[in-house]
Length: 290
Image (tube, helix red, strand yellow):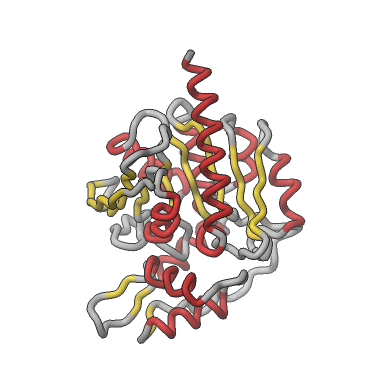
């Protein structure tokens, strides 16, 4: 059975220091994966998936303003994508697959558009796709920054995230995405409330460059999309119009008992589909090279 190890590091990025972690399997698929976390987490959201998949090499950065990375102050999709591409050019071979979750689905598509010769495929995990007109503006929600105990953090996610979560899955999820110093210290969110409010304000503003549909139409490489069957961010009614936006056919995998985090709640289904997608993309990439 294939095993592996985690490597971690920091690198200077555009005005900040970026933290990254990389799963290096002993025997890897030909195509590595650049994995970009969503706005509620950090690179640790991919650790359980990478360790369970075993043979998939995954480079997972903490994006600007999240986890252990600095915050240079910009929230543009183009800047997030530039960070990801610079890291990939430093640490990955010339051909890769880019994976994004939630708001990072736009970033993954932007990476593919900016480096179509480098990106062989795109995987989107529960993108935020709205149905109908946007809801009226509402006051920003109260965003907790820390919890006194792990149990408090687990209770928060159980109450706020849809889907079926076992106790073990929820415990691992909290361990992987929260920041925790010492045996008795608080369990901290991997962002500040001000940072998250700033990002959400930008994505809702006229200056936003996070248009999923426009990016989908422009992407030409193969695309795999996961939707949580119980997700409120990507409801079933939004699926047909989103898939139709892609110029090339996009494959949809529904994870029936998942909400916004199918990688955590149904990892087996996600891993099987991801490995099949990587094998297909690798084969097509080899045929194109011939």
